[in-house]
Image (cartoon, rainbow, N blue to C red; front, side):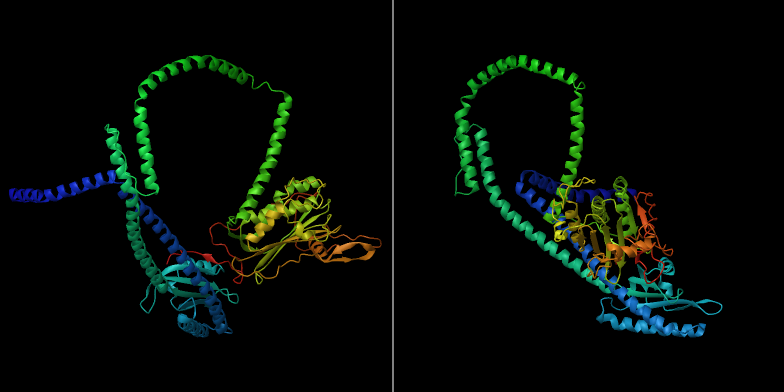
Length: 622
């Protein structure tokens, strides 16, 4: 048996030997062709690079289309959730008995599920199923309706934490569908124990993506074949004259100095042939002169080397002497160096501003959008100008809302805008307090920040000129912030980049007000600004002027801003305790530490379901 198996193995090896030799010969021929054929290398390189580009474009397009499909699905699901939550709450009104709750909950699920069947073709969300859960009765017990077991535990924890959340998960439904689905859950404002979940299958989206991938793959293959044919045709027109030049050059190298290329036409290849022939003629004439030129070159090299040695040594000694005395400089040079550093810093700032302006002019400025609490940007800007306010003896009063105002903004650009506005207000406040207020309005999809000073103000018409580049209302005025005259110009460009607006108001001798208004959600229309631009100046007793907005701020800020002036003015009564705005960099103290930011685990939300932050707890890939 062993001898028989050994014979079969040897016979198999002898039979495969020709096949191996053939593959080896083919590999050797291909390697030789690759090394010698420029046309083959160009074709293969073009196809390889094209394949890489097509693959990258396919991946990017697939990712973009997938994100768009899922975003549309999520937005439609949120709208369906709002309607479903209202339906469930209306069904459960007045139900407290467990049996009645169970019946009402089943009726509510039926009503919601019926809407899901009707939405198959009439809504971007498509068909969906629902699951409900509530705690009720005495003693309390959990009552459910629908496939509540399909809901992931992690998603339920978010909803039970009073957050509207969604997650992509694998589900099984009674119709036999098993696959990925979008599950969105929401608490109830009326009943904290009520949980509403909608399950949206992603079968249609997966089929659309599969069809798109197949189409892109077939199109890419066809494009590669066409590119190969086009590249072969184009390179052939270039390679043939080059091959002819290579043959003539080889003969010329063998000593056949009369060989010349054939000139055809007047194109680039013809000019190449003419240049090659001229080169060959020049070489043949110069070869005879190389012998005598060789002797002359050797003599010239020897003479030049000898004559340059002495001056080179002298220059080297002088350089060493100067280098050894580099530390013994005149004190005036040290002062000049210090002034040079200072002016260079200012020049660098001007250059950075000019570069930023040039980016805006070229349309290449980009936003790094984050969803964050705008109050953090206000606090950061106030903290930045704290030192300037202390030096100027100016009190900066910060009036912020109690609740977070979350918006989709570029924090670096927003902070820069507020920093420029605050520095400008401090420079022109003439020692009077500067007020910065912020308010948000979710219905108007807007957040506004107003910076108000009570300094020199603006002349009529200057509220537009103030945003011009290098414009100053009084060029002879001393500036404490050392600005370049481009800060407000950059600020208005940053506001426009956010699809927002920056406006100015001022009255000579009364002060100026700047209002930055930004959308809370990018892509949605922004309504009316939550804060007025003009403070509403009016006359009071004694000829003094006060502002309705400033009076309101003073009342909320306490005695620090509540003042009565003019003859016969009554003593100001201290207001009732209210939320005190934060005071930064004023003569009486420093700014308080900023409030802790939101958690970094991506699960933050507000305390009520109506203001809850949508939290993505899963991957977006279907």
